[in-house]
Length: 351
Image 1 (cartoon, rainbow, N blue to C red):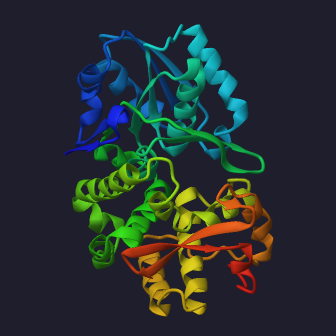
Image 2: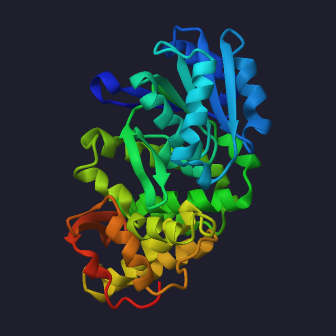
């Protein structure tokens, strides 16, 4: 399956195919005529898939950098290590960086590629469900600061995205669950039939035969949204459903408790619950969402008073001059941006 993100000079193809990892080199040759490649990965992914990718790139001079897995790696302090590795490998502006990993590696290697020599070609090969359906597409790259998530970043589109659903067979269960948070998000914001498909299955294993089609649908939704709003000023805000609370939960626990997808699940449910209490969304939406989150092993609460999180919301990059845009649901499958302030969360009780 193939999609194209149509952004003029920044357009790029996305290929979704079982087993595509072993054909990486032939796909790369379509968009890259240079010789030198830097593969950035992590110590979970590279031992499993590094050899497959490197074997397919035998026509190129390949260099590798393997970083520790996990969100704490996506920090400003990691960037000098990447730049140093790129300098040692003599990476130039005509060379290529491949991000082989989940969302952390995609964001981190992507930001390094965007800023090294003011921009080196980038290919995303996402190996987690979350990265396949969401973070590898759209051109957002970033690192975290101690004060908040993704506070230093850029818009930098890849030259290509290669998605191999087969790699999900080696993912630990928690990373599957994590990705399902973003899959459910897409159903909530744009596609009631996708949401219904998820609701009609009783587990991820039951859903598995439909996975390539579901990945394709999520990527296609994001493609359309990104084409309409490349720089996140309007329609693209809908992709942040649940994320305002999610980022603050992640930061509160220093990225060591809830994963991103788990935090998004909590954020989606809680904001829908609060909106239901305020008459801004049907009360039934929260209950239906909770049911689907539970089916796929996702949490819907974190046990914190909302007051503990509002300090971090004040620093969120979506909160400008105490003007906060939150994403709410007209109904499942139809979302909208609601302008408010951090006071929206007052009196909401335990999250």
